[in-house]
Image 1 (spheres, one colour):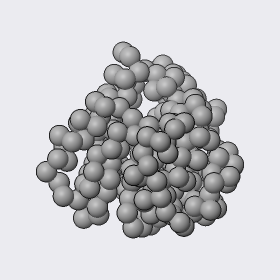
Image 2 (cartoon, rainbow, N blue to C red):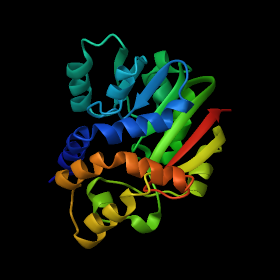
Image 3 (cartoon, one colour):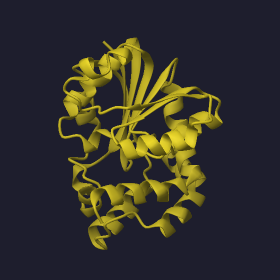
Image 4 (cartoon, rainbow, N blue to C red):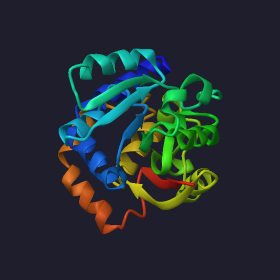
Length: 238
């Protein structure tokens, strides 16, 4: 499978995990305010959670195929204010998207920045898109030691720690919090990617995982978000 096929397969499998998507949305929701831009919306798994909650959102992706999929999915939906073809690693963002500069109060990117080689440029562009005191919310895979074939096939350049997340955000943002998400997924990621060498996340186990999300949420709360397969960073525009 090509990286694009692996990515689409992963998004389609995750689309069958509504409880997991809702949990991710609920986790970032406290940091969302005002006008919202989602970076890397894919096929709209998290965008759909905003719509269900009655919260307006602008969606975007660097892939024209995904943008067309988003237009097809949300073309009728008034809460989706716009579908934007946007590359967060664009070195000429100001020239290509002057209409978006300083426009949004919240920008979030979930499982996006790890795909960008120049992640510092991506974060700098986040700042340009935000209004004064706007919030950025970034979720990326955690623990460099967990990097395996799943990361390779998904074209991840790296995995992060809470400290590297703070270092990434701090030049452009006042970092307000960093914490881990989804402790229970660590063994599954290691088993599938490091032991079984699976090139994609298997759909069957994901569906079982989805059923147990209430338990896994409790595990995160019990451990005070000190460990997890992902790390989340929140910052306020300097």
